[in-house]
Image 1: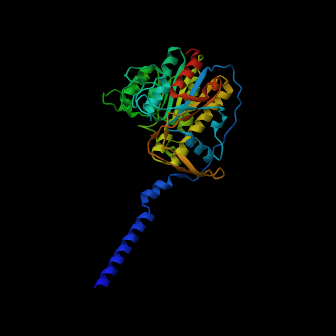
Image 2: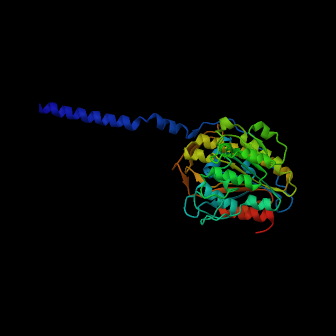
Image 3: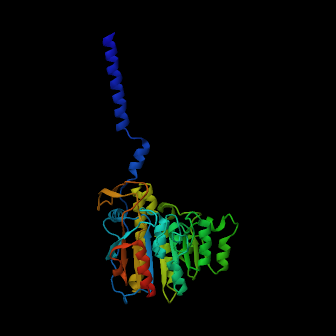
Length: 389
């Protein structure tokens, strides 16, 4: 009997150890799925051109600011690797880094970071276009419009989301997208293109802002081909009910919208300011999804290529490519320039506090080297575009 009990104890112990081994060595399907999206397998690369650095004067007539939401150095290099070793971004020879902290947090959110870039004022997380005391602060598009300079906003998110909203609106909370849409109506900006039609039409106050924009002289377009072919001077392009979808759904929405915005704004003889956001690099970082990050970085790079086509011919346009913060704590554990494969890894599903890169091309580009506050982006653009501090 004693021998039997000893044998049974050994069998039970072996069974328990075997079960533990199976649990440890057999990942769940969800874990396998999570791991699979951390590797971009490679794909077709877009062709990249090299542009001359031949500019007229030291000050720009026009400024195009790109913001890669959630884009850190690893995200940039993931895109470069996936595109077989080249990006349009490599035309930018003046490179620096920005400190991204907000007024009340070491790790910023998009609302506070975009407000710092748009207004030159750090604020609390979640706040749009206001200081920490919730007083409105003038943004760069308002300053441009006051001087008769054209202004435009393009984003793959809803146009009323945190980053584009900070360049137009003044609201206590980024979630107030219906109120942000009202601020767009009052802004007088020449071009808006992005998602978010519901915030203009399906509103709690019952107002149809599309009709109100039409009465103000805007052409309102919801079809991408109509946006592509638009030739007027005031455009509201609403391309999705809320945010636009993934790249496979929205196609070339961002490069097309960027080119259209430039074509509309360049009609102003005094010049223009345009902000373009690649909104969903951030979403890829939150999801720890290397595939989405790569898709979004390459989409942003193609839009940058449209701006370079214009700026290289124009000679009077400064292009700045910045980021509001890094998302995901991304690093790269493997890759191939031949196949475009990128193996990413992540430390978090949220934002991080690391510095983010900034790139500049065109007259005044040398201002953007070194380490700077994110508020310095506004200060430098303001000085260069308006000739004053």
